Amino acid sequence: MLITLVIAAFILSFFFSMSEIVYTVADRIKIRVLSKSGARSAIQVKRLIKNPDNFLVPVLVGNNIANTAYATFFAYLVADMKWDISHYESTFIITILLVIFSEMIPKVIGKKYSTALSVKFIYPFLAAKIFFSPITRIVGIMSKWLLKLLRIPMSKDSWVMISKDDIDVILENATRTRSVKKEDALAIRSVMSLDEKKVREIMLHRKNIISVELNSPVYRLKKMVMLTSFSKIIVYENDLDNIVGAAFVKDLLKDPQEIKDIVRPVLFIPENASVLSLFKTLKKDKATIAVAIDEFGGCIGLVTMHDILELIVGKVDDPHDRKTSDRGIIYRPESGSFIVAGSADLEELDGMIRSITGDEKELFGDKNGTVNGFITNHLQRIPEQGETFEVRKLKFKIVKARKNFVETIIIQALEKTE
Image (cartoon, rainbow, N blue to C red):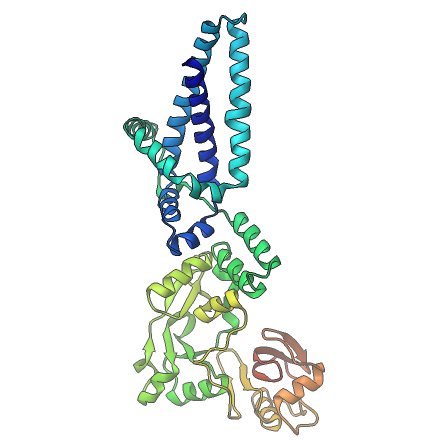
């Protein structure tokens, strides 16, 4: 009889020890797929592992009871069989057996076949869970009371079952087996990193923001829209530290008399905020644009939902941005710079810059052609967006560029040419 009880306690200890690792490391994705296919056992596993407390408390209670019973029955068996061993030797034997057969071996087996075993043994585990439920309830209540007494908070986020490192390993294996495309894996990793990136890392810097003063005539806003092809233009009053909102291209169809008639409010977000928090805020407020501010509330940059999407999936064409179709040059007196379309006439630009700077010497030499042609001939390549360079006392900043064409440039006269 004692031998039967020792074996039964040993089997229970093995079972609970293995269950602990099985339901902790079981592949959540595979379980979810199996449950969606209609497998009842997988559905039960999915419910069980949703909250670790569902299986950890019964496992710990059952394992401790089994180990205690195993040690007790083994001691009685030694006495009943009248084996000539001391209490120390008996304790040593029990410890060795428990460590090897009730901890090491079941955990190794459980970790290797965790997903398969989690489904196969779910019903025996649920039966054991129900059997020990009176004890587990008491233990659960006492544990919560003790944690509360020690002021240790327990939240739903206390258990993180899959870490970022785990997902990286999963994605690496998935791309290796070609079950997931490299582009998709890259997008997933980008989403995971949104919480680590700060708004200041992806924002358009203040000096590159295309903006218009609130009291400017509407025709200037229209010309700026046609030139830059942007669907939204920042509107400020007096200076960029006093942004009042943004003007949307579609609102120009209302034929406003003043820019203030179509100004929409924009979100303001600290530069140190995470891109993930900005993404959530934009989604919640159904907004597409936000102004990054410093600790003093001053504007330091601009971020759009389009920027975040490009961070995740790469280059994305904005359906609301129109292609530049006309030749245009806008002079910004507040900064002394020119917003120029790549298709703008070089001779016209030369004349406008010299009329403002007072230079008599021609700036571009051969003035036949467009600004895009001048830039590509000078660099012998298509420049990248954000690139800057200097030519003949002029500073060029590429605001928008395609693979084969420079669309928008900001040109600043550094000093009077000689």
